[in-house]
Image (cartoon, one colour):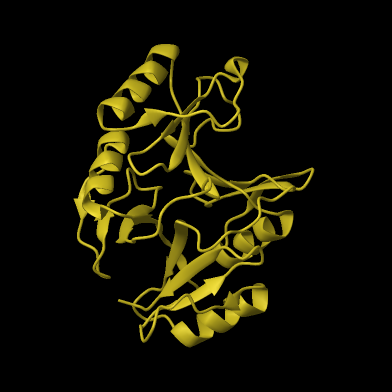
Length: 240
């Protein structure tokens, strides 16, 4: 039995504080975490949880992944932006053009995200968290499609996107050129197995698809740290 996307994890100086910000923006509630992190429950039945893990590392470069939040109207977009600012977010400039229409913000620890204007056809029906937009190659889009069993919903000009069979947030990869990797990424996926899953067999399957086992100093733990074909770290958690 294969693993599923359990969570998107944020490295954070203040895990509880960052969780409060995202709970307020997304309307999520905190939830018990079987692996001991500060966690938010999915916003709806199609989503995945967020986990916030303690880290002393400073953020020095843009993240390789960010949320694209959708809006239903210009007023709704303004309200989402205002709510994020009230909770401690801020406007940032990453070279976006005024005519592009989306608003680029950062959370209190500098993690970038966008609030997309209404009428975006690609994100229609995806929910409030329309996409997790990622820096990545076409190969890595194919890898994650096979790893998660999510079909490709976009594959053009080396840009790819996948979405769970039941819908919800799309995960997208923008294709080349890729930003150079400088140290461990601050956001990563956690995959998890059902209670009767075979942890060793799933590691072997992911490696056969193109993942590699890596050591980030995790020590003697019961989860496995891997990297996808682009070098993005992710964890396979043990069955619980």
